[in-house]
Length: 443
Image (cartoon, rainbow, N blue to C red; front, side, top):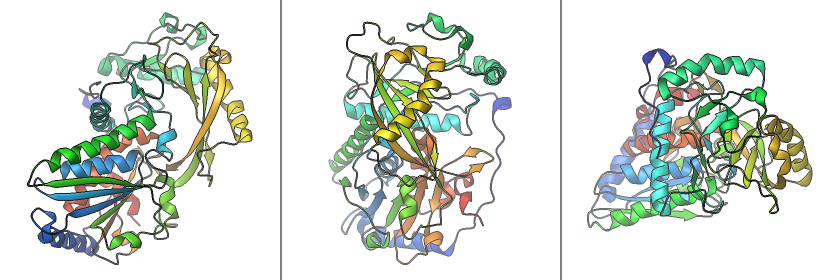
């Protein structure tokens, strides 16, 4: 597993602009009291019912929260985590994402908390690989491979982007010892000479999102099974393929409900028009080399990040994305023929500009998902985290929490977002979440 980006000299770290911190509210205090009552009733061990958590959504955010709730629940406690998703594991936008993973901005600069996001994501990937039985390899089929360790290149597509890449090149050499090399040295050499050289990110990964999410759920179940071998603690993790119409239908059965529904969070009646999220539908096109084509994409050649990204999954399969349809209300993962045609007309010229060989590949299918895009802050576009009791109006002893707005970086963000939220939920203390993630609630 690649190590996290480290040894960052202070001069290259981004400036941190903090939001003002909310005072602990009376609702949060009530939630803490409810938690203490449940623990006294047996949730902390011994007799009585266990602490019960409902996680809405089985995508990146939901499964990360579930895993961290199980991991950080107090030793000797009795905990049950129920995951609700009518579409099953990875049935939403997470499962159809491109899977390219790196901690950089479009200008190839380390994102705010990029090293921390990377580390937590690597921890979850490691657990998923262990649960999956073995690390993925290009020799496996596309559907079975979990991770492709190819790296990613970022070629310039214009004089402006070339200047930007040249500006950050000394930083990349200094911190990561990355190499800016001639793409013709790769196994696949059909790159235009004018796009050389390019930035290479050797530790960047390409993840099979559906397979990863299934493996992460298995990891949750394995953790529960191992804990249950002890006579002093009990952990359960179950998946329910059910739709939740409103939050109050769960309030009487759970100590906390964590909403990880992505763009669908706003469809809950308690959250309608209360979340600063924008929806954006993205279409991804999948291509394959015809079976009679002898030449394949090199097993060690990287994926490509440009105006359109190309995520190579083995020697004969590539996903190209993505379109951006703002304010879309089409949540279906299915893509009509017209929508697929429009997507190809938009994506193919961008893809062929960095990889002309794509003209030899044949279109297979298209898939789509709705991103939940958060507002832009001084530190970039960050997930929306925090307690929702004040937002929705607390009407029970159950506390409500949000992990939302992971946007186009859900894979990178989900590890840290889930960890911070799970710890806050278990402790009933929103102050465990850095204010940069909760300031969206500020008036």
